[in-house]
Image 1 (cartoon, one colour):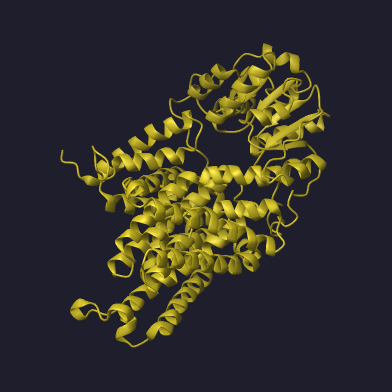
Image 2 (cartoon, rainbow, N blue to C red; image 1 turned 180 degrees about the vertical axis):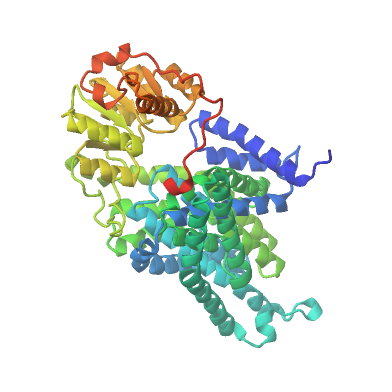
Length: 621
């Protein structure tokens, strides 16, 4: 069968990304570095396979759409308005400073003023994918700092949309009418620069009005109708259709970027109870296409620029990594924000990405930006993305007050940052890492406080157990605080967090998180620290049971098997037959930790199907 460049770029991109990402993980550096190097290997400047750059860019755009849709699902309109007082002026001032620095570097290189302006604008806007991945890795999206960073990014995107609309008009003013007499639409109607600016704002306002007045009713209604059909496949398809369809319509009808259109679609849907389910359904595709974005960026990088223009490249990197970061830090401090918040925002913006590539390509095509400027922008994007984890690590080292606050107030429900109060309809944003070592002994540790963990924890607390919860989800953290459990806010797979939980002194560990990979890490590390510790984990399949048992779980409970046993017990009872005794597996045994090692691992009944039974309909979520 004939295969085209689309299949080739998907296979090569994902395959190389896996290889280089695994090597990066092995070397304890960010997998993003591996994805970028995979793109360099597949690009035209290195020997071997050369992928289709245009196809790679289009696939990467899908990743940006899905990523921004997912962010919108967790970012309400109140969240956006709550940070407008700092995100709007901060982004505008930072764009102005970066543009002036770009003009200065362009003047030094002998470019004219307009070339310097385009160059500076391209250096002023951060990458959506890189910023959000960095925030997600550190679990900062739902904090005040995360909301400021995302709001700041939205303002930057709006500014870049305006710049893209105005560039053709600017090119006509500089170079005259394009060859062939095809002038921009705004010029043919004699709108001028201010007319184009007004038209762009009118389109943006029209899009927002459309989403608030029509989309706010239609999108949730459509998804609720699909949810009530009971088809998970149809629900997943509906979510993807909404995300991609709204983004495409926003770009085609209103001139808004794909990213902004998808973000507002997700934000409208966030008010629906189906928002969490929609986020889960888009996660696998979102991650895959986000990887392809980094591969596509790597394909643009010409390593030869390092030798041809080292001085201008150092200047470009200085603007991105130092100039923008210092400007953002000064702006945040001027608004009275904490050192931690200022450093987080400055580190988040110390890179460039998607809009930078678009501006560079359009500026070069219109004859405003020299080819050297495009090469410097691409090289600066690659290197800044590579160095962004280092900048974040440096920012975390320079922010000592967050741990200090956590140590002073280990049990306080307030966030480590006073300004991190969330909107009224959402739980308060917790400290990102409150891992003050516990003084408990002979206690029970519960990892994960979601639907399973919260029921388990409530039962243990009602029995008077000494309970310590490890959780990092904002909603689950709020639930644990409300129940009165002692809390560590962090990732339980982190050895530092498990050490702070004193699993060496614990009498039992319940791993209630659904992900078997992360749960296996927790079991393995806990078993290494306390070989005699009884560990109970949850699973969804026989393979997960085997994996968790291999990692050190004493007992692994498969939810589907327990449901089947309960239903069988109910059936026997309805027939008038005394139900077979079902040994309690979790909370009722909590008071007797020594008995857990004697419990046999549950086996699924003979009628258990080979595949997992279908999940509950989306409406039940």
